[in-house]
Length: 344
Image 1 (cartoon, one colour):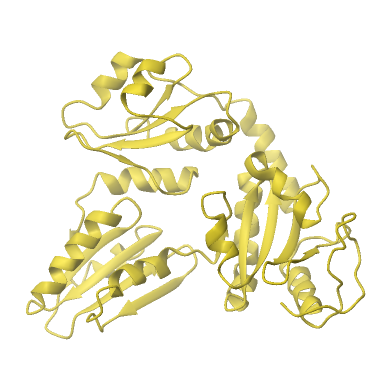
Image 2 (spheres, one colour; image 1 turned 90 degrees about the horizontal axis):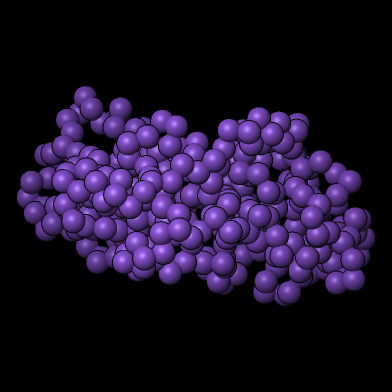
């Protein structure tokens, strides 16, 4: 059902999706004065730019003024002026002469959230009545309940907000109680709170934990982080972002259940389809799932004859742990297993 739904949406959207690039003159007007803009510098022939196109155009439907794109194939000198060397490159112009890279997910929802967040102050002053609404206003929200006596914490918090404003919304409220800082990951319904702020890395660690999704997106940029996590990886391959998002939502409870031992990730086959073959999956046959144990070099392809559901995947993982599924022999995509093997 998940696959059929994503295909239908892709077909319906395909007729309307198209870049609407800005000319150089329009671009310079858009970033001048006090105007802010998120700019996508793209090269139409690259797979990454093609993958961004439906997400960008979907975001631009509701954020027409804040999002513009430049075709570097026809505006090479302009892209060179802004040191664009790879595509797509997303840059935010704050209207005051400052440019910064966009580091968030290249998804329509994330792009829309970013452009709204960037237009706000780096820290929003709250009162007790506004906290509940604010902490659910974005995918990732940080709320500091600051005791006025902890001036050093306020300085550290201000610095943190300036560093991570592009990815989280920050708020503060004064309290007479002990200072606490909470980060809300509303995508995965998780909350992280710290009150002992003596260690210098407490706040950065809080943000890192909060930003870590239950199911992440595997890319070349974060490949080593995942492979060196010390955990086995559960890969889900699909060409459609709608399909991948539906998988993340459906598999959230399973991913949370196993998060101490396994890392769940999705893979965009439009950009990283070549990763499927080393994981025992047939080329071009997606969606597909495979489990990898980097420590022992073992791979367990999920049978293509089985539907990818939370219950089925959970059962497959338990079968691996109990030795009921044999690791892939490297010869062909496995459909069924049977021999014992090392645990995850």
